[in-house]
Structures are given as structure tokens and as C-alpha cells.
Image (tube, rainbow, N blue to C red; front, side, top):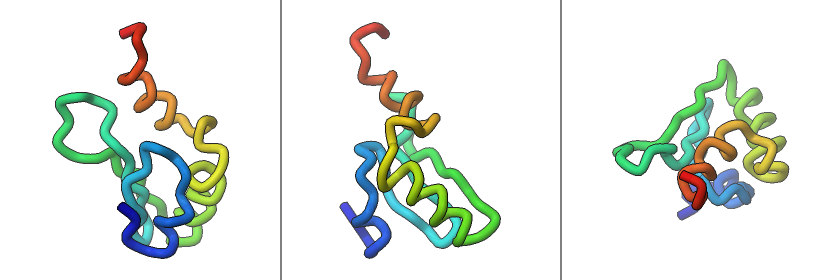
Length: 75
């Protein structure tokens, strides 16, 4: 569920939420109790990465591939 305006821009199915300098994504392990968090030096860096991968080209994000693999029939 989107919590902020920035959150509503994200199109990646594994996106969880944005913080000021962090991006939270779904965990890659079935047993994980928390999300994967990617931290950035600045809010601008987080915004740039989010615009590039979370909001658009999410299939090119490294975490997308890792998380998506847990739903693959090949496992």
C-alpha cells in the first residue's frame, strides 16, 4: 500500500516503500520476516535510483531479478 506521493510512483511489484534515503523491497527469502532495504547517501540519490528502477525499468533492477526468482517454477 502506498504511503506517500513518491510511493505511488513506484511500479515494481516488489516495491514496499520509500524512506528519505532508503528503498524497502519485498524480501527474497520465503522465510524472511522483513524487507530488503537499500540505503543511499542522500535523498536525491534515492530519488534518482527510484526513478530509474522502481518507477520504470524495474525488470533491470538487480533486486527485482533476485526477488522474482523465488516465484520461479525452476526452484
